Amino acid sequence: MTEVFKKEVFKNKEEICAAATELFIEKAAESIEARNKFVVCLSGGSTPELMFRMLAKPENAERVNWKKVHFFWGDERMVPPDDPDSNYGMTNDALLKKIDIPSGNIHRIKGELEPKLSAGEYRAELNVFFRHKQPVFDLCFMGMGDDGHTASLFPKTKALKLVRKRAAEVYVSKLKAWRVTLSAPVLNMSRYMLFMVAGRNKAKALKEVWYGELNPRLYPAQLMRAAENEVVWYLDEALGKAV
Image (cartoon, rainbow, N blue to C red; front, side):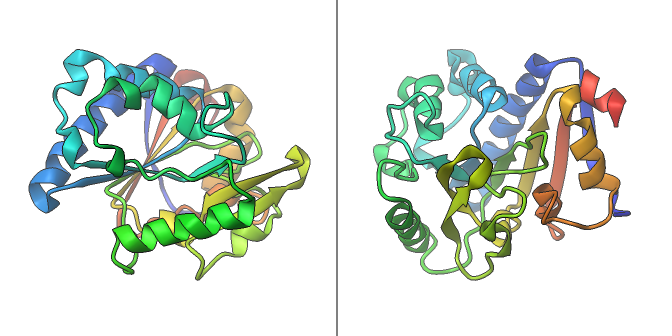
């Protein structure tokens, strides 16, 4: 692939999250002024968790009009919301229960349901909120695994071929587990997409995603093009030096 990605390299994960916190606050103000709401797609993982905790600090939280913020998730594990593995549960503990946000502004994937039913309900939630039009997130947080997966778009899974379905259940053989994920076309409509990726162990996959031949079946993060919008990668120093 010859496309040049925008990237910023930070000393460590803490600096990545501090920058992402400022970006969230900035984009919230811009979106609320332009469209009277700020619609965000969240990801799971330890890096976003740290960012959520920073965002929940009073000096940061007071800079956001939470009544105009709506949260969606890019994917979810098939576990109850209070399970330690729940992406929603992590966000709730780190951020949601510490801010004054209306419950109706939280659009979670119901991991406690059967996968097919959960995916169906999430598609319905998207349809209602976006009035049956194409979903567009103002800000989309993404991560990437050392196998090149992002959201729950894992290598060699059927979810990579999703076109019309905005969300679907997917079985990940190597994890022996079901997930629900948004499709690549939906994620790619985000106005601003931010990847937060840390760790030298992800260098091989990131090189393939950025510079390798286009092969999203093996490196699903290659699907994240957002061609008409902005995609930025925040990397830690260890990873940045490796790529």
